[in-house]
Length: 221
Image (cartoon, rainbow, N blue to C red):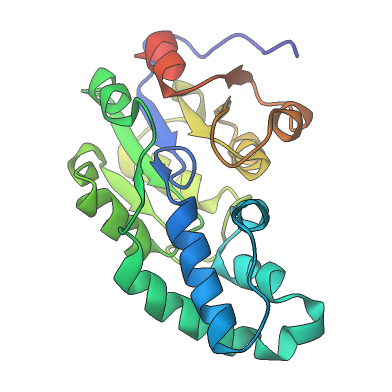
């Protein structure tokens, strides 16, 4: 892959995804999915299966988890998932390696979150893990009329910042984050070590592919 040149330095803003980018949430998500499946007498899903379901919103997660053969039970499964996750979203979730140090390196920049996770869960995670104060804006999958890969969340964040798309970057761990940044005209940084595989991320053609948040901080901080 031949990434295009980075935006002019220093960058003015950084937008982050949450799941797999700033926070390792997979164990709590999988636990709540399987709690809901068990309650309906349906087969549980492995951690790796659930990992492939994450990224395009909670409705997508539930539809993938339940399967087309049980689609009529999706609404009930969604209710059970939300109720359980609301109580247990911080049981095992933890910051990704280097997350706090990365945020510290971007002190003075406009920082925001653009996630497909419902906003109340995003805020619970950020507050519970002690990083909410870093962010000027927080958008979840229900904060705007459309979820990622729609550019609406990014555009809303830039309007709040008073910034142009070419003044900063969007960092995420899945192809949907790359699609979102591209749709909004923002420089995209894909991060390995989250929920997306190297092959998936390379195929999505981000502007830059980095190993982790430490590299992101060194490159742009």
